[in-house]
Length: 195
Image (cartoon, rainbow, N blue to C red; front, side):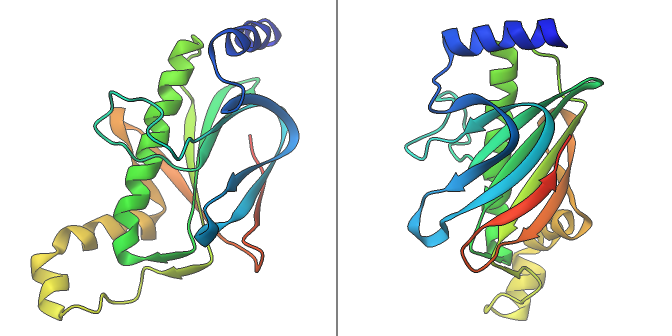
């Protein structure tokens, strides 16, 4: 792993913008800068981590149809392989928000896979999606009628199954585990140790 890590660090320094992609050790965080959802999500790792932060000015990869992207992601360099972690931070999470959160996480997944390819890294052995929120309102009914919720908008009910089951279906047949977390009064959350 040491040789691969040294080569990766060299390529990161040569090809990628340090404002968005950088190595971290120990405790690190991803920060939401938008006023309505300001806060930080903390993580801890004993292994080296490559942190990838989103640019809120536009997509990380201009050619993607999906122009949305989550707050960030990171790759953990474990002895048994690489793991990919994605993060989206919300204030309230309502039923109608889940579709957008999925698009943001998918955008970060695709950007992360592209960065991994640029760095000539192997595919991750697992993917975890973290969703931090101040309030989970996904179980509350939409204010629209019962007919809208059951008949006209059945896709929303099917999509919410992913949220309730804790599994997110991503491109390339990848299923990510969803880890949910409630943010504190300052908008922060500590998701603990990752590997």
